[in-house]
Length: 203
Image (cartoon, rainbow, N blue to C red; front, top):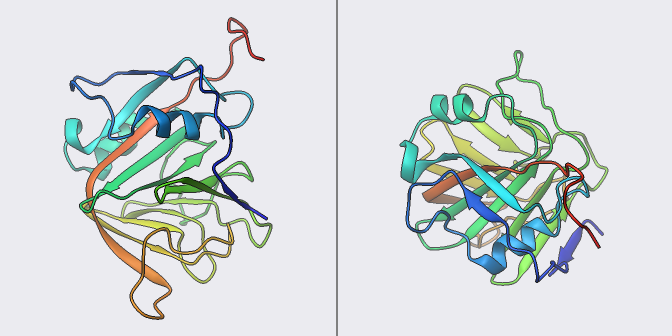
């Protein structure tokens, strides 16, 4: 199954969160950072540092700034905190950049996650290759019947739906029989994860 609950994280390794000017550099807790870090591909799993590319709380709400700040940076973690305090997001092994012709990109390493409150991760389910979509109007993860995560142009709101790509349910509670749930973004962060450079000891 692409769904895994509470994948083990390296409790001894909490990355240093670099690049923020805020007293609290991320909306994630240390435990949440470790959970995500321990689920990344081996080349960047349990990296000793994460570097902040973009944060709505620091850089303002701008799709243009998001793309500009993330230019050329692979291995990025998207973090969303809703106005109700829920945390969800995604990992992309490839950089966020607008694709001409609205083409999807990414690879089978792409995944969605949420904390509910335990860590739950949804990996590629081999149903389609709709991993990441970046346009001037939206950023989206997954596709088929619904987007797993869809962020609007203003980066103020989004939706999460039942998604074929990751065989994932909506990452937030829905109303009735709805297949998707809207949300309001309190904070959105994008972190770049450096690849293993050979100077760290990995067990």
